[in-house]
Image (tube, rainbow, N blue to C red):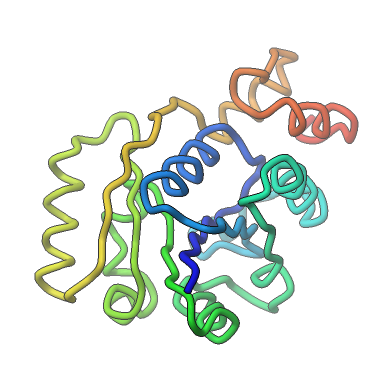
Length: 200
């Protein structure tokens, strides 16, 4: 049996904050693989313009090529309609029937997880690793984790990732203003953004 982490998101663009979560999860949970899964349409970002799917997949693929623990899944992008985590995790369960699946996520998303589409079923059926985020009180995260464990018998782990002050909005603003983004994104992603003129 393998232990597999799933890190989803718009990855618009993929940045060092995302990778800090993947790296911490791989080490602390002793994951065999981390699936990086760009979303087609996030339910939380409807109506927001994103970079083309092929560009977001390409940026994620650059990181998978640099780390043999990372693999890219286009499961959500290949599906029609909105990406719901419950549906995605059920599809992954069918693909990885004998493996232990961990869904990796940031604090803000974790705190509202039980209100998501089929949130209770998610918490009962899958394991979750929550990554602390700058500006959030760790005690709030710990309290919510305890609540999920009590209410849903959930399997929860709180990561000890590097907390980086990075947002995709900040990165896009820097690009439009001609400021460097090397401290926000991996070198390969910065090069891709520049070569393809993204976020101008």
